[in-house]
Image (cartoon, rainbow over the protein chains, first blue to last red):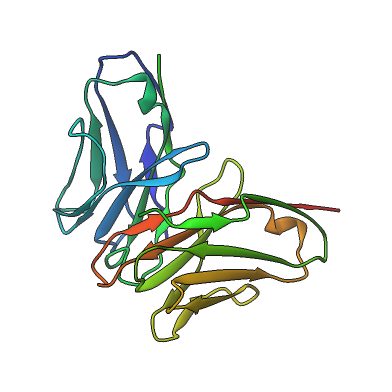
Length: 115
Length: 111
């Protein structure tokens, strides 16, 4: 069974640009969550999608957005990139809600560097 | 709302035990533990639920004190493979809320 796939693995962007990251969950999983990981900050929750609907949202500015498609694949978009957006972006998939006591499976992440 | 983890970092020799603590200022419904090795994705260890149910790892144990809103992860007879960063995630009162992770505890096991 294939794991969670995130593409691309690495990205270098310039301030002011926008970027789209992709996440393909494990087959049969309907929930996809996105996290931003920076040194010392742990895993900061961005948002969670379940069956194409955003169910939860973290405390990030509106420049961060996402969506989920009917096949459960999800994309995350960051517009008007800032230097502080440099981070590892992780996506996790689960059969149910992440908070509904189900194990989440993480992808390898996309390392975004903003210069 | 981010849970607090302690210690921030710990170094152990093989065979020693360690305890990682996680506490929240909010009432908890569930506590989730993950381990992330350097350069790898976080991997699920355990979920502890209000009411005492546990799901997870055979060789790692944990406790959940609902009244104190705390959880502890117990690593006994540590092995080199236990090295990594341990994250606790907390789910609030309802089972439909998001999981918020703490800053992580770095654990290094040395020979």
